[in-house]
Image (cartoon, rainbow, N blue to C red; front, side):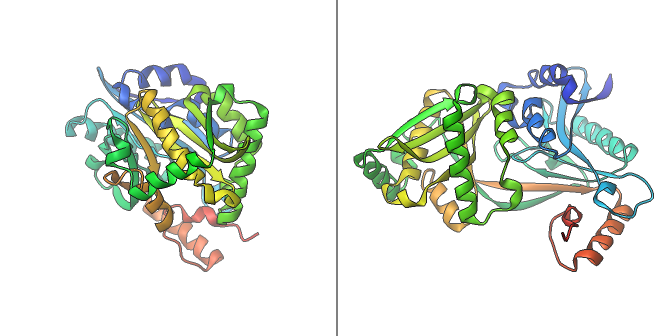
Length: 353
């Protein structure tokens, strides 16, 4: 039997049931209904999961669906686009045969056609297998390199850390820095507020886009929906928190998600100490990988100092399902914005106000 279903957040039990039918390493945090709940509640779109099966062979593809006409474009009817939630996403399957995948992607394409979806956009998970390699007329674009720490390496400190990083860690220890951690379902209001303040301070310093100033409800929902799948870690000096990070926890992969540091304390090397202690903790907890992500040249160099041989390529993916309507929307966007953008969903930047 070849069939597909669409699950909503109200179908979380089914969504999770089929996710748990996949190999353990694929049961990743970024593909769960709990993670997608964060973004539907953040008004980032309606969360769906496209589920396809041929007997015991299954494929899951979660995404957020958004209206385009709501942005103010002149359109003959309602159109939509879809994209994975913030973070790493893509397709999960227990069968990577081209025959199965072609049938699956044909169903996805037909679904998009029937539901007036003109474009889709993904940030492909660089650790999990990528079935999208076999999708026809789907564009995979190299975006940047990411850094992954192999936690199965018993001697990662000696073999993967840069010498300068090891020196910084020793300096942090001599400076009296301490480390503490707590799962999201156990964090108290004081520590959560400290995390938010340091995170916002870091966003201010880096001139971040307004989107990344996640509100109070977003952080409260992390505790509500993710619980022990979220890990808050802190570095302190004389009892004061000076650096922090939020780590998302899958079954085998941990992900650096959000964080920040008070710049007045850089001299004590809190960032190096925080990453080192978190790597030690994740090894003890049985994780196989810690994906640190990418970033600007300086940030990337810092992350690579913990995993000299851990460079993994990161790709984004896109597909246009209705070229005529997509081109019409882009033309309207260009007339209003009078600027250039390489983003596939560039028309979402329409507002001049």
